[in-house]
Length: 90
Image 1 (cartoon, rainbow, N blue to C red):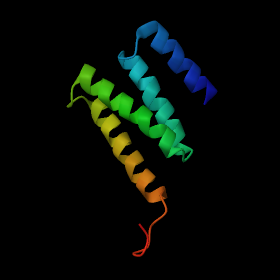
Image 2: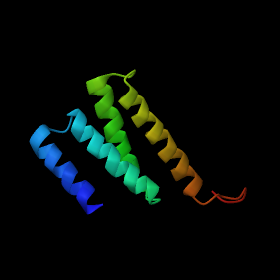
Image 3: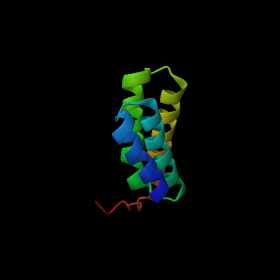
Image 4: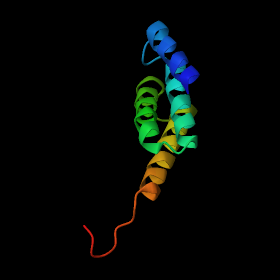
């Protein structure tokens, strides 16, 4: 994880937040966290990657669609990981 964060920091500083390579690094860090079950940490990264890719590449670009799929998978995993409430709990 430390190397992913270091790479992301370097890309943000060198290329800027919206550069496609920076957005790939954001997505990659999100994917690592997601694979480790750290969905709450992955979600804001996937959201940032999706919003950036939409702005830079457009909705129909394959990388944007990949970011959308990652975001949806993370939201599903987050929902599934939350404790279920019984009918008498609110």
